[in-house]
Amino acid sequence: MLYGIVAAITALFLAAVLAALLRVPALRLGLLDRRQRQRRVPLFGGAAVVLATCLVAVAGDWTGIAPLGDGIEVLLTAGGAVAALGLVADVWRLNARFLVIGTALAAAFVVPYGDTGVIAGVAGVGWITFVALAFRSLDHADGVAGTVGVVTAFGVAACAAVEVMDGLAVLLSVFAAALTGFLMHNWPPARVALGACGSLFAGFLLAAAAVTARAGHDPVVGAGVLLALTAVAGADVVLVVLSRRLARRPLLRCGSDHLAHRLRRLGLTAQGVTVLLGVAAFAAVLVGVLVHSGWMDVRAVLWVAGGALVVVFGLLRVAVYGPTRARGRRPGRAGRTPRARGPRGARTAGVARGAGGGAGGTFGAGGHQEGRPAPRPGAGSAPVYAPRRQPEDHAHHPESSDRRAGRSVSPQVNASLRVRNG
Image (cartoon, rainbow, N blue to C red; front, top):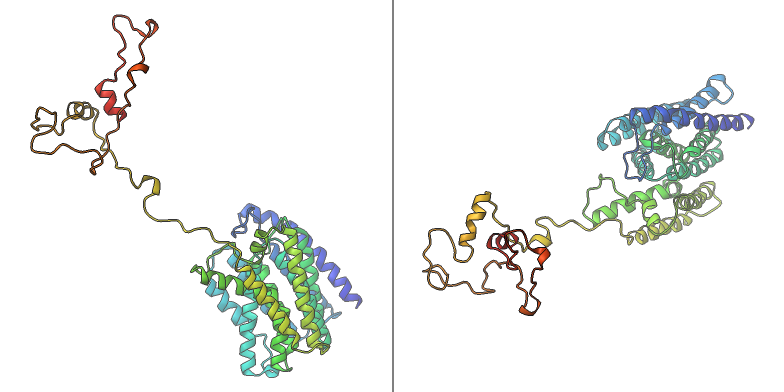
């Protein structure tokens, strides 16, 4: 008990210090959060969480004060491999299929097939992979993934304590403390981001620990408990998938259509969104712990699932996608006819043709070219723009100050200026 408290305090301060120190090289190397945020947040916060968790847990196991056990050591090693894969994705743009395959391979080594069976074990591998990627998707706003991760870690640690898995409970307590230290820098407005390294590690560790704690129990009840423990992350994935399918958008394209984005559009502040999602995660995790311990019937999970579906379908009505841009010419220029531009001499020579037609044509007495009917106004011909004539009573008569030396300014507009203005 005393070691658990000391280990948690150590992990908290170690993660806080590492997050502050690793922020500097992330800024210098340009490793910033590439999601659609208003601010660019440096990464490596997840690396601080992983290092703090692993160092404290390994120190306790190496000194013999809090041995982890064989299964927990494999779990921590596989989680470190997933975190390394996420770090590669933070530094370089890694295809999503590599993240899925790598996370699934790591999950295949931590599932206790002897207690779950082959079919349930394969389902457990799929669930661990889904939750790990869901936590990566949940890291779309400041403080959300960290807050939900802390609440879920304490809930899964309580389930492990019920099963008398002391090593797993200590590991999850250390991880929750490390996430709390990270939240000192990630609370809105965030100074450092969790990134794929920390979010994949968090989702993988929590899902694998929950599957290990539920191994050997009724699979139906186990599925309900796992659903309740990760309800917020699962609801975010379902919301994004449905929204992008209905809008016919690519599933893997980043967008401002997650839980926090839609809640912000409803008027909540960034801090309010984080607190609200943390409270929702606490309520769902509490139901999962009570069902796991036998203090509540499994049908209580239906309330969690129903509430999550109500939230998902309610937030689907929040508009997050802008109008589609029309392709082609702009409406304001659709009816305009482009004017032919030529050399300066050609435009000057066009003055002679302005009233009659093309060069080399024969003109009649009326000023129109012979052999062609006179153009009628509104008959489909291009309109001729010319300066509007002033009425006789408002005609402007130049004063003496307007007269130039040796010549007077005519009130009429000459032909070259009329053509040029037209």
